[in-house]
Image (cartoon, rainbow, N blue to C red; front, side, top):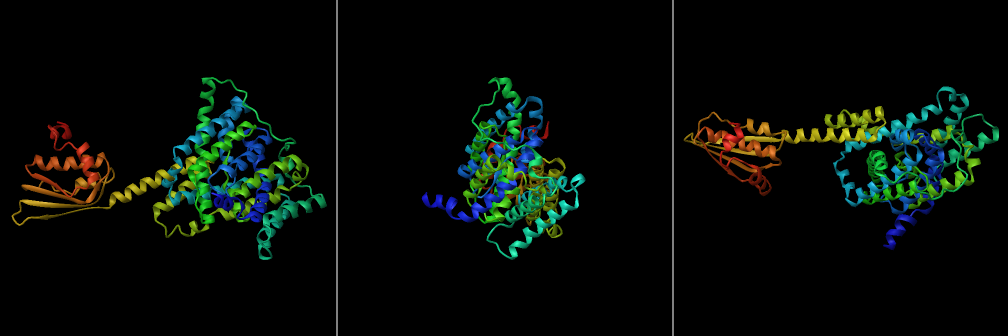
Amino acid sequence: MLNAYKQSWLSNVRGDLLAGLVVALALIPEAIAFSIIAGVDPKVGLYASFCIAVITAIVGGRPGMISAATGAMALVMVTLVRDHGLEYLLAATLLTGVLQIFAGIFKLGLLMRFVSRSVVTGFVNALAILIFLAQLPEITGDNATPLVFAILAGGLAIIYGLPYITKAVPSPLICIVVLTGIAMYFGFDVRTVGDMGELPDSLPVFLLPNVPLTFETLQIIFPYAATLAVVGLLESMMTATIIDDLTDSTSNKNRECVGQGVANIGAGLIGGMAGCAMIGQSVINVKSGGRGRLSSFTAGSVLLILVVFLGEWVGQIPMAALVAVMIMVAIGTFSWSSVRDLRTNPKSSSIVMISTVAVVVMTHNLALGVLLGVLLSALFFARKVGDILYIGSTLSEDGLHRQYTVIGQVFFTSADQFIGGFDFKEGIDKVTIDLSRAHFWDITAISSLDKVILKFRRDGADVELIGLNEASATLVDRFAVHDKPDAVERLMGH
C-alpha cells in the first residue's frame, strides 16, 4: 500500500511539478473559453478546473491524466443555462457526479472493451482537429496581425527547438514565460488571457444550488445530467486509454468513473460546472514529463493560485503563446500513422476511423462520433464472423444417407447462409448433421436449425444431430421447437 502510494505520488516529483505548472497555464484560457461557450461567468469554469483536477488526482484511477472543465461538456450545458440559469446547472453537475459514481460501482468502465482501436484512433484524430480549429479565431480575422504570427512562430520555434539544446525544463513552459516577458517588456498590443474574461479574485466557497427540491426540478436536470455523465465518462475513458498507451501503463477504469463523479460533485458544491478528462492537457502533461498524481494535483492547485493571487500577471500572457502550445498538442495528438496506414489497413477499419472523425468534427459531439464508430465496428465484425461458415457433405454408397459437416459460427448474420448450405430436394432417407466444429450463438441460429431439420423431415428424411457443444445444446434445449408437438405447423406458419 505504501509503495503504491509512493509510486503514484512521489516517483517523479520534479517532472510532475514542472508539467503541472505548464498544464495550469494552458488550463486558464481553456477554462475561460469553455465557460463562455456554456454561457456562464469565467470563474465557473476556472473553479471547476481547479476542483476537478485536484480531486481526480487523489481519487481517480489514471495517474498523470488531467481532468477539468471541457468543451464537450460545455456544449451540453448551453440550453440548460439559457433556459433555467446557473443554479440549475450546478444542480445538474451534482447529479452528474452521482450518476458517474454509480457507473463506477456497477463497473461500467469495462464497456471500454467494446471500443475498437479504430474508434480510439478516430476519436484521437477528431480531437486533434478540434483542438487546432479552436485556435483559429486567435490567429484569423482582426487578430491576424504580423505581430501575432511572429509570436506564434517564435513560440513554435522554442517548443520544437529547445529540446535539442536541453530537456531539463519543459519547452512549453519556457515558451509561455519567455514570450510573456518579451510582450510585457516591449508593450506589444496583442490579445492576452486577460482579454478573454475577468479572472476571479477570491477563493471559492462551498454552497448548495439554490433550486427547489421538487420532482419538477429533477425532470429538468436529469436529461442534461445523464448526457453529461455519458459524455464525461466516454471522453475520460478514451483519454485514459490513450494515456495508458503513451505511458505504457494501465489504469483502473471503474475507479476513474467514481473519481470523475466525486470530482463533479465537488465542482458543483463550489459553484463550478461539470467536467471530465482533457486529452489536450493530458498530452501536454505527459509530453512535459508528468507521470504521477502529483502533476494533476499541481495543475489544479497552481491554477487556483495563479488566477486568484497572480491574476494581474497571468492576464498578460499573450494568447498567441498559448496557441503555439495548443498547436503542438494538436500535432502531437493526431495519429499521423493512421493516414499512412489507410491503404494497408482493412477497409472496414479505415471506414470506422474516418466516420468517427467526420461525425465528431461536424457535430462537435464526441459521444455521437464514438457511438457511430462502435456501431460500425460491431456491424463489420458481425459480418466478418458470419462469413466464416463452411458446410460440406458426403453421400453414402447406397445414396440414401448424407452427412453434413458444419464449421463456423451460426448467428443472426449467418443464419440464411446456414440454411442455404443444405439440399432439401435430394430425396434421401437419412441426414446426419455434424456440429462438432460449429457454435450456435442466438435464437436466430436456433430458428435456422429448426427450419433445416423440419424441412428434411417434411420430405420424409430422418435427421440426426451429432457433436453439439454444451453451450449450443443449452440454447437448443431451451428454444428449439423441432422436437415439440406441432413443430412443423408452428414454424412454417400453417
